[in-house]
Length: 128
Length: 427
Image (tube, rainbow over all chains, first blue to last red; front, side, top):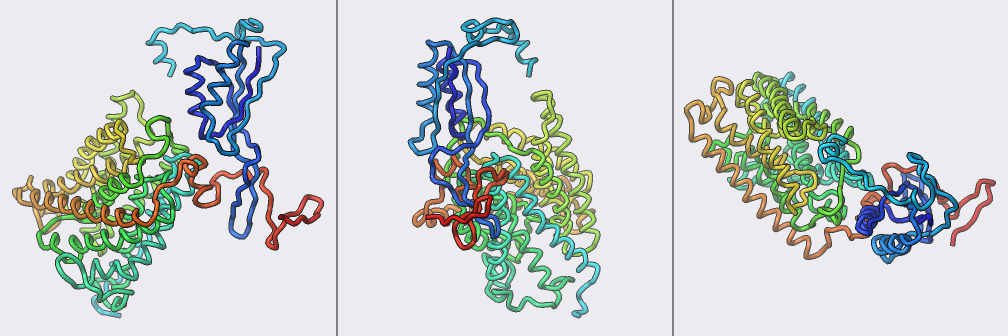
């Protein structure tokens, strides 16, 4: 099992999610973060105060996957998140010692393999 | 003081002028609530900046072209630079107040257009556009209807600006979308409102301001103003009521963005009719106006036309419905002058149609000409990169919701300072 940790541009998140969906990668966590990846800092001015802003809004995705899913996951993010300019982000692939699924207590491979939850169409509508 | 000046009328028009001026910032909040957070300030600035650019254009030239004695198509230059606009009576109020009141209309009409091109137009070209547009499109059209031009002599009824303001702005909005293009994310990403409370707040302030817009258009504190005032209260109630029913029928949910839209549509529709129809007719007009705009919005969202905040559906469709219903529901008993088609004067509906079609044609052709000329010398569309980081940062160098983390103060003499007070020079 691996943890794929990706930092991407906020405006690219939708494209990334779509690419992951197409690659059948399900289940992820997303958070809004700020960071600096070597892009040119920008100048902002508020009345007489001028600032150099080095931190940029980014989105961090955390995806726990089984080994054979690492490659498609990384490929999907690489393809969708790139603009070719400095500041596109990074992907880190980290080893994972243990994974538990809280609902069932399943461990490791079983815990990162998505369950296709069967739902009646009517039930799905009602859930919204 | 000129004995023709009436203090009561002057008081009401002073208040009305302030109310209508407030509508433009209110419009900014109405619009800004519906864009993404990275474009908040840009959207607000598209309403705030015309206060200066259109306002001054009006003072220097626009007012004269609209209201100075002239031909049937355009006014003269007698009032240019507010020359000959003094403290003497214009009707029963000081002339200078009349000019200021009409100026607030020019400003909001230009700002209305911005709803169609939010989140993607470069700011400099936007300023140039609204300035030119207010002089070349708004002023002549105001002359046609209110300044003694040909639509006025034809007998077209437009109490407070259904044609001049709303249809005009909506047609210009449609044309400018063709030049600026759709947002880069339009049609393949969900673009949802960042702050619906802003939109509702803006709507509330718009409604408040609209009392000055419509009841002020009586240009006096009289019964006509009272009628317009009450109709401005009643018509949007009808629209909001019907809209809510339509929303409930569609998704079983009455939406807040829908309510805000409904109120604006109702206000737009009653604008040409305000001082001409009975209160009951105003309610009926408000109720009817909800339907075409509601379905126009749904239809537009399925097209490739990125009229982002639906200026065409709200102001264009609402304005046309209002202008035509004015020709049907006008009642001499209430306005002391003209009946509409329902009260034995079918000719009035024909005149209203002429006014609507003339407005659409003039606005479309002139707006197209301005933008065609502009795009020959300047790019109007923000780049994909600029749209990506947002127009607040790319056009204004500011953020609406800044946390200040990682921001380094640049000292006035250059360089920065660390927490211990040591100064560093930047390269």
